[in-house]
Length: 245
Image 1 (cartoon, helix red, strand yellow):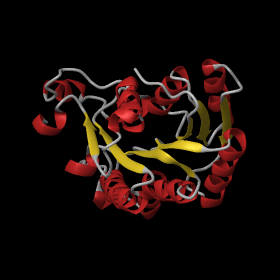
Image 2 (cartoon, helix red, strand yellow; image 1 turned 90 degrees about the vertical axis):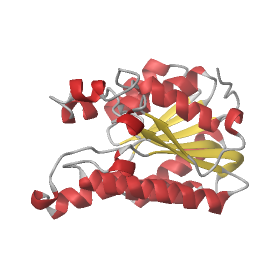
Image 3 (cartoon, helix red, strand yellow; image 1 turned 120 degrees about the vertical axis):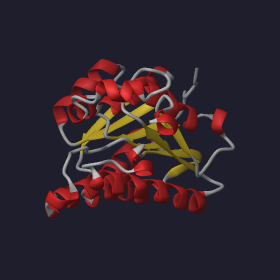
């Protein structure tokens, strides 16, 4: 569906369920991919699954640490000479009611889900190629709220506002959009919705949960020339759950 030959992708959160699907899709479409996540082992496994080492590089880095994000950005430039696409897929989804949430739980959720997006985008804005694109993974929670996940919802709402603002700042050279997934079948999400699967399915018009490739396809669309006149937008990918749930 997409041709990313001669293009390069810097992907943060590459080892997660959604990140893996994005990496594999872009590589299959001809892109050079630079994978970033905290742990080395899943990165090497993903790189081996993708194959073709000349087009796949990786670096372990903590997206909540600005200096490590900056180093990963420079490593991607050194590897491929340019960055056409920046995708932020790192995320943390843990549960706690506001009344019982401790400071460290709040801070960690904001660090991983919001501060990291600022760090990665700030590090890349001056080196993104003309005509490039940024896609930030937000969440349905950032629009509707999310009981027992106030820290996550607040962070993702911040990603939405940040993405729209960055779109204004980088236009017309680079496009910036966000994607708000619904419930996607990843280990992180499935752990949190245990016992609610049937309710969510019944409230979803398309009567299924999302899968990582649903999000990867949306990311590819927003990076491709097919969305050349789209910036500052949020694409909902949730089977209709947003309007009906």
